[in-house]
Amino acid sequence: MPILLVALFSLASALTAASVRAAVGPNGVTVHWGLVGWPRFNYRLDQIEHSEVVELPWWRVVYGIWWTPKRTSCTVRSGPTLRLILFNGRIVTITVPEPAAALAALQLVSSESA
Image 1 (cartoon, rainbow, N blue to C red):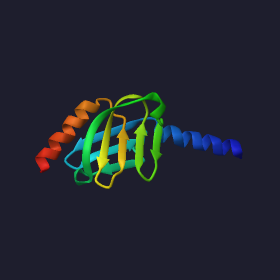
Image 2 (image 1 turned 30 degrees about the vertical axis):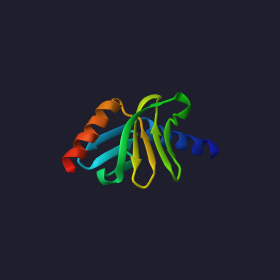
Image 3 (image 1 turned 180 degrees about the vertical axis):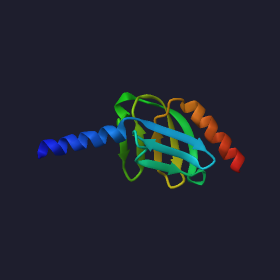
Image 4 (image 1 turned 45 degrees about the vertical axis):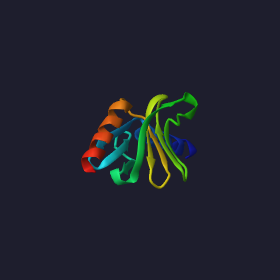
């Protein structure tokens, strides 16, 4: 029985943490995890106070999702990473393939909605 639980947990981890996908658009930033797109996080434009590209060192990579009362990290690699600072003080760090392009898109949709 314990082996079955370990196998199920491993399968669930592989399906949800296999990849991270982020989309920036008029509704803000949406983050989808894994092969089935779950869990999913959405950060509306009116929630985002500031956004930037930061250099994420290897020791800050969580290789999945890490949530604390002040931070959410959705990271699978080190290097340039998109960071959102929300009006409520929460810091959200997201691994995206092209963080500078994601930041430019976010700034563009933010200026268009203002």
